[in-house]
Length: 218
Image (cartoon, rainbow, N blue to C red; front, top):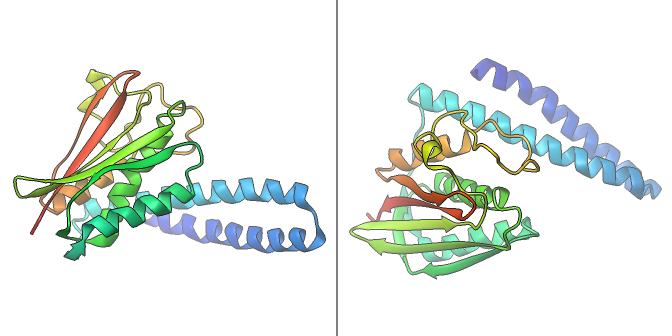
């Protein structure tokens, strides 16, 4: 899997580079119609890059090379910045911080960003008719508990025990969600557990889902 992932990176990077050159050329020539097609192509290339990154993450996890680099983190400002950045690329949903009272935690900022981004983008992806996603963070029994709530398709009870497994995808998902291998939640769970935390959910079909994860405060 590692070899395949690395072999895929080179042609995808080349396609991306040639696409960017062509986009600049078309823009200079005033060809906006074909420029729109290139923007759609770029989106698919970005999705391919994410799939490749996920495959590489799987190889790190399976070989025991998933490592965290925790540091003191001003979590309140950290979470606000992530949600602000994600809102810029989320047009159809309002990302709402309903509670954000945790001041400081000790965690790997890069990996924590990966977990939160996965949960929020999933919430958007699987609530195509929803208008908002609610995010909250609070302190509880020595842990920071962060939750991401959507108002979408939900997850059946018989699937909830499988949702964090590799390559598992929710039945009846949003058909416009795009390319996916069903690796995001598995990777997020491994990251959270490597940091001595826990990832879990509450869900009901057609009523949405709430994903929670915990991180030790110190």
